[in-house]
Image (cartoon, rainbow, N blue to C red; front, side, top):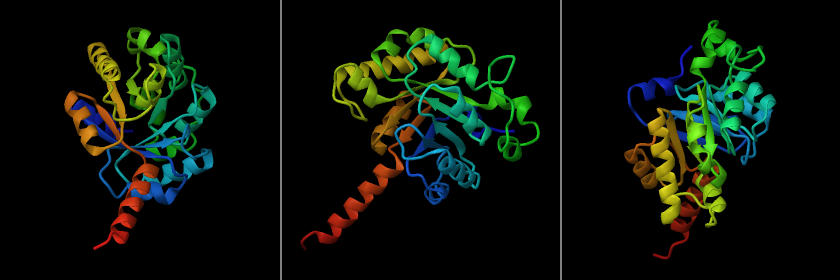
Length: 253
């Protein structure tokens, strides 16, 4: 069993993550033709349900990218089901306390560390017969820090044993702090909060990821020291591409 994302981080490299909101194995397969380090299926704000996610995980197997999923909430059933389906990483929204983070890690881990029920139906089929022996160590767990409450409890969250790292949702973070919800934040107070989360994670020896919109901003975040940046989403990129193509076609010459 091997998680390519963990291998990349062990070499000191930053990762570029794709965000899959369209419930389509074909769309996921298309992303596999590009050199993303990880592909995350969004079951929270994306349009994807479990059957669609399963087909997308099957498509992602054609690439070297690490298959991940953002779950709708901190709920053990869907976390365990997606891991059993073959996801090698889980991003969990609205982790606001150290207790939330501890529950999250337990739901992703087999005993004696955690509460994950044993039955890796597809995971063992695609990740190898040794899956059970290595699953705890090879599963990426990223707790979303995206509220003022999480900021207050950040030290406890990043100190959670076996938590891989934190993942910043800039829109919810901005909203929680009283600012306009958006990606690629330049609001000074929000930027300071983002930099504080990064520094706190680094001091604790855990990974830090952030959701970005534009490539230049994502590059800036990698240069700042983030371990993982997400480049928009499939819906945003498709919508922007369609708009640009149509505008070019209709432009007066």
